[in-house]
Length: 209
Ligand SMILES: C/C1=C2N=C(/C=C3N=C(/C(C)=C4\N[C@@](C)([C@@H]5N=C1[C@](C)(CCC(=O)O)[C@H]5CC(=O)O)[C@@](C)(CC(=O)O)[C@@H]4CCC(=O)O)[C@@](C)(CC(=O)O)[C@@H]\3CCC(=O)O)C(C)(C)[C@@H]/2CCC(=O)O
Image 1 (cartoon, rainbow, N blue to C red):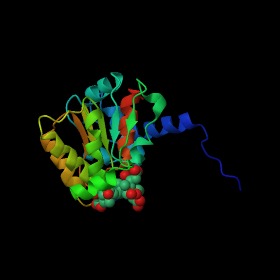
Image 2: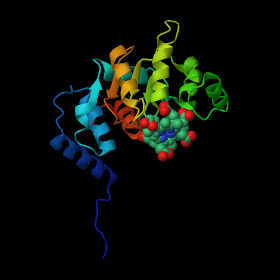
Image 3: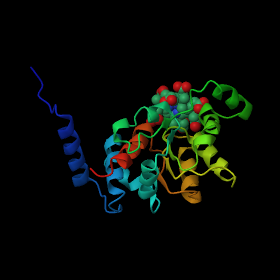
Image 4: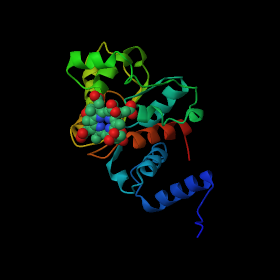
């Protein structure tokens, strides 16, 4: 038996987004944030995720304006940086993940922290006005919040803080939501992850779907 299935990529996306809009309760989101939430739900394959998605006021505008101005996207994991669809980016933006830099292992030992957190020290020259995308490592988000407590630390334009998991994920996102050092987006609780995070970036880069 030969299986018959949808083979048109664009049609698959359109059908998925229509199903999400029919099934999810998107009433909490304004016109700027609704397409971002839709794409995050799409990446998770989970209607219901919308209950946990939070955008601070002006998040989408701040992130989009930064990308249009040529800001880099700083990612905690390669799973995030590799997922960014380059042709969508409005200014051929740099996508940076410092996790594999050869200096990071030694820095992590010196800092007694994870490689994910240590790698953020290498973001400093790129951080001013950047769009931050943290989708994996709670320690990276906690370290960023600690860095931003120093008024001399350069400030990103927007933060997507959606690390996933059981140890520190919920707490790091609660801390970001409480601090709101810049406009931000979180998925409350244990849910999150690289795919959801990069979906948010791709939605911001695409504007409307
Ligand atoms: C504790 C860690 C967690 N990782 C999770 C989930 C996933 N991680 C994957 C992969 C391939 C990677 N995770 C690392 C970032 C690695 N993960 C950690 C750390 C030990 C600590 C981070 C933290 O707690 O904040 C971290 C290593 C470090 O020293 O920082 C990774 C670098 C490990 C490695 O391969 O060396 C690597 C990232 C590679 C990259 O993309 O650049 C998974 C695919 C799991 C797997 O391989 O089985 C998965 C992906 C989830 C996602 O959507 O991103 C958790 C659950 C987030 C967990 C932290 C919280 C917890 O409760 O344990």
